[in-house]
Each structure stands twice: as structure tokens, then as C-alpha cells.
Length: 82
Image 1 (cartoon, rainbow, N blue to C red):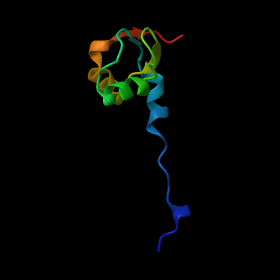
Image 2: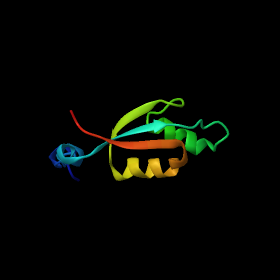
Image 3: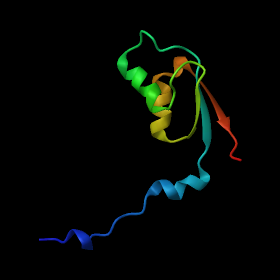
């Protein structure tokens, strides 16, 4: 029987990559009324609530996949970190 306390935990990889990551601004330019629910939920996952709302996100493969799913309704631009 193994003891849970003796197992080592890996450090989060996100903290290691954060220094070199690019950030992007995603803006919802089209309404999602009448679209499938999964597309509306994708916009909510990106932090977009209504048309013309925007969010600044770290570009990761997961975020890029969400953007590709509803690309017809988004405007994407790169942002320089302050």
C-alpha cells in the first residue's frame, strides 16, 4: 500500500512557460444568437459575453482551438505585454 503523502507532485508547466508566452486580444464582433449551444459556451469560455466585448488571453493550443471553433465571429490581434 502506497502512502499518498510520499508521492511527489510535478510543478505546474504553465508557470514555466508564462514568461515566453504571447498574449492575444479576442473580440466578439458577431452575435451568437441562433448558433449551436457549444459555440455559445465556447465564447463564454473565452470570457466573451456580448458583441464588442473583448478579452486578453495567453495563447495556448487550447485557446487557439477555441478561437478556431468560432473564428467567424471573432477578431483576433496580438498584444504586447506591458
